[in-house]
Image (cartoon, one colour):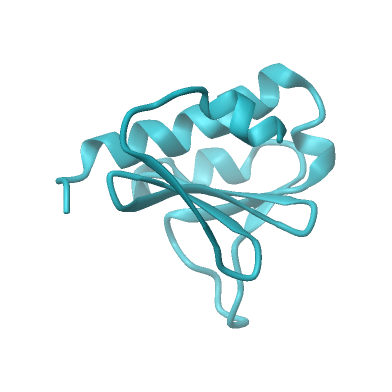
Length: 100
């Protein structure tokens, strides 16, 4: 619910249940929630800077880290400002992608 609130009323936003919740902007994933982790999609060049945030780690569903996707643990999103920053990064990246 906190992620939904941080996303607000963006036009083109949809939600899918895929073993967690994936939030899509114009058909492209921007953020998601898996267990207590926030998954954030970011530009490849921002990947390392997001990993430097407290409680962030590579996203590794398959055992191999995926560039451009980062998990941020619950402790890293407890403060509203931190959550909004992470969600904003995911939304910002999705907005740069062409619409499907």
